[in-house]
Length: 451
Ligand SMILES: C[S@@+](CC[C@H](N)C(=O)[O-])C[C@H]1O[C@@H](n2cnc3c(N)ncnc32)[C@H](O)[C@@H]1O
Ligand code: SF4
Image (cartoon, rainbow, N blue to C red):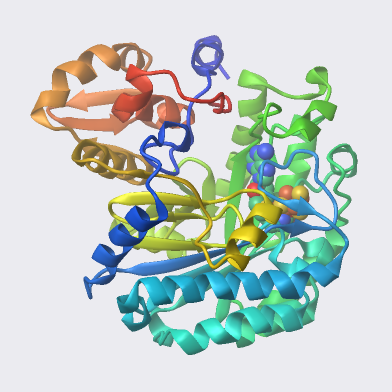
């Protein structure tokens, strides 16, 4: 890295959102009631051409990985499985009762996330998935089901059960293959476990295997990340999500266990990304958006080429849907006009479901400006260029002037474009569209650093 580049890393390593939604969660203001949320959902359900997806959150994990920023419940008590599955199904029934048109809609996409969905035994997964399949007619050629799995607790039988229920994509948490890093994050996961599960997935017929990797973990070095990238290349997942370690100790106290001096930051952290990136590109992968890679045959790459790449709370996805219905503790839903999040604590979720109430915690009703900006942000984050409205041009020239000087973006006519060397700073440039961030302090402390 040149000295000038290094300085940019210092200059732009500031707290910024990841823009998996707009407005970003800390700026959700209206807190619609459950009734308001349902009214927005009914509007969407009344439109036959509206595209639907479903997200189901399974919060349980048997042990805590200390880097983890996800909403999870750490337990070894598998008696919790069956009641949880019943609660999620009860929540779905509440939606079907409150939004009658929903039963007529087919879901294009189903994603099981967590926590660890494969904390559930195969029978529990089947008990969850069969009633959903019965409720919605989905055309196999239009249906995309994916699951996040932790290879340490996932068996071939899990994968077979999911496959039998229409799942063709599996995302495996790997993070880093290095034993020292694994030890420091409390996640010992020998290479052979990941290798065996990858082979199982391929034999069963999964068409897309994703690995989650993280850069910026404690004691990760250039040499270690090189090794992790090379081992990854050897197993050839169809996709790689290569996340920047999001340090949010005020939300996730376990991250305080890391020593500051062990954590790569700024330019040093970004260098880890660049090292692995070069290895992935040389190995035939294509970079997708800001932190994903895919083999050219993978649908994520095709979506990038034909402009249909989408971004939602889970990150980059090839399916552009209008509504995502989130079920389970802490699950987030979105419609063209509203965001909605379920309560985050498991006991509260249990209680609300037992009372027959949709477990609303918070949300946001989007105004016209929010919706226009959300569309621009989506385009910029997925296509890396976007057309500005005439009234945005002067503001862009002023706000983005330092980034134009630094060779991060260009503005030609009304077209804002991220330059190749600007890729690490995509989130910083996207702040231009974030009128809420630019005009007020967030309600809570939240964002991780840009790099
Ligand atoms: C729900 S987990 C994946 C499934 C499963 N629980 C596992 O860990 O294998 C989602 C992914 O988010 C990523 N992740 C979690 N905490 C993170 C953090 N603080 N910074 C960056 N990525 C994080 C990890 O790569 C993780 O695999
Ligand atoms: S990384 Fe996955 S397995 Fe580890 S605590 Fe987080 S959700 Fe659970």
